[in-house]
Length: 157
Image 1 (cartoon, rainbow, N blue to C red):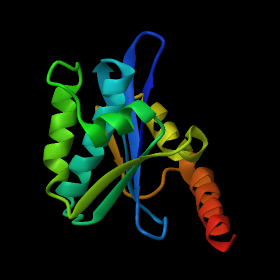
Image 2 (cartoon, rainbow, N blue to C red):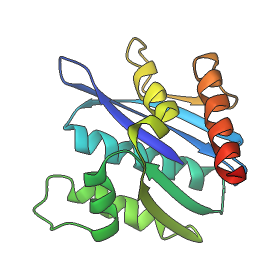
Image 3 (tube, rainbow, N blue to C red):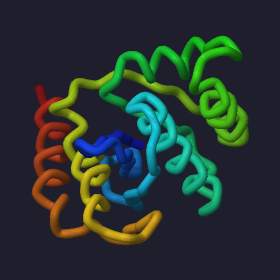
């Protein structure tokens, strides 16, 4: 699962993510309007929404979350104090993720997270709180192809 958060100039936050199988094939994606919050909270809440989707669909799978914010990865892997402004979201992600067979979070570069980045920005002009895509929306098709090509070349190097 790749996730990302985004902010508009007026401070409204959005999140998005894509779930793929072990071969890199599209499974489901989402975009969510989060309201006003910090960028760190937006990024964490995008992971939270993705985790809810996995559990809601009974995707009882080993889950690797790839994220382009080192700070978010560190919060999820190491935890945070109760006084941290995002401790409630970190705690909820950890609680939900314990229901999956395995759940790990790793850092990836921004250039490897373009699908989630696009999904986090697509709901900006829309009024819906959350959009769930059962098939790849047209605006991420080329990015998914580029990702699968990158995976292919990595495997064959």
